[in-house]
Length: 235
Image 1 (tube, rainbow, N blue to C red):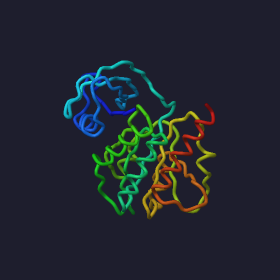
Image 2: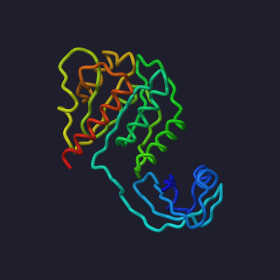
Image 3: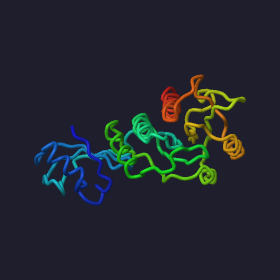
Image 4: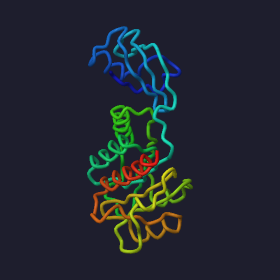
């Protein structure tokens, strides 16, 4: 059954224009056909097409399910944009499918990419949310500098993954199920030593993600998957 993203369905029984076009011109849905909707705020709807129109497709809500697949934690990954933007887009897609609540692109000292197209990345996240049948849209923050991110006061556990020598344990041993968590993932050239020191002074604990040296986007996905698996094992 077709699933559509309708962030304003609580205010108007209309699909957004892009979703209307997909429903009517691509899927050729007719009046009376059943559809499913999510608003990105945790609500899942069963509905039917009432007036098919390629710009303003109207639907009738049959059932509303609140807090659909609500998560018990808040997972925030702040990740440096990759030189090849497709790799960052891949991370955003896969992390959304696995389960993530907030993403922040951070510009670090050794970042080779300084600009992220927010709108494009958000479209990829929306598509991944629909693909994985989720009703909560992860929050995508505007890019910021590492220094700006350090001014945040996130609640919960805080970790930074880096490749420098020193005492650090695997995330799987450091993270505690049920806890909110923020994880920092650096650029291809890693965080600078100064950035690591600043993060530690701000309460971030150094972690390892395994013995292999991972690409930025892979590290982000591994961190995301690790936190989700630990929480799933305690359910």
